[in-house]
Amino acid sequence: MKKIAGFLSAAVAVLSLNGCGGSDSYDHTYYLQTYDDILGEYVGVEGVYYECDSYVGDTGDHGEFRMRDGDTCTFWDLDDTVSSEYNILYLGANSSGTVGLADVEYSCDSGISGETDYDGAFDFDPTYENPYYPGDVCDFYFFE
Image 1 (cartoon, rainbow, N blue to C red):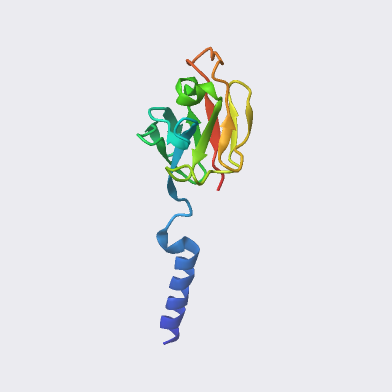
Image 2: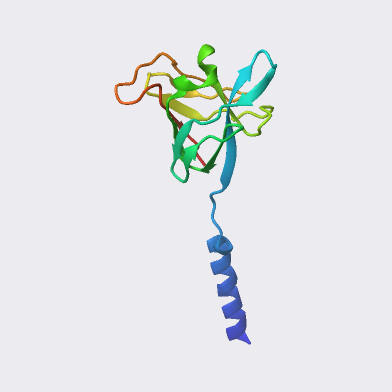
């Protein structure tokens, strides 16, 4: 009986240390957005190429992109976005733009850097001429 109790205790300890085989990192869908003054709402920025540590692709119809906690994500050619007139884009947690991703650190090739503000807004330079790519490129650091 003591052997069984000892075995069960060891098994519980291993499972709790391993988290039942799960991962502490989670996948997310977030949104690259701009604000449309005419419509009076946030709209997704479609077709922007991005590379995260876990996912690579183009933003979807609503500006959606996939990433995992702890990823660094790079967005390319931001000067081609609909926000180039305003120089501001947003990282949103939902497609309607009502929940922004605040305090995400970022840095752009143009030299602009900082953290997204309370509504997920960040600045970039749409006129920046990158020697290697057509426009400004920004890295975002999604720390766990």
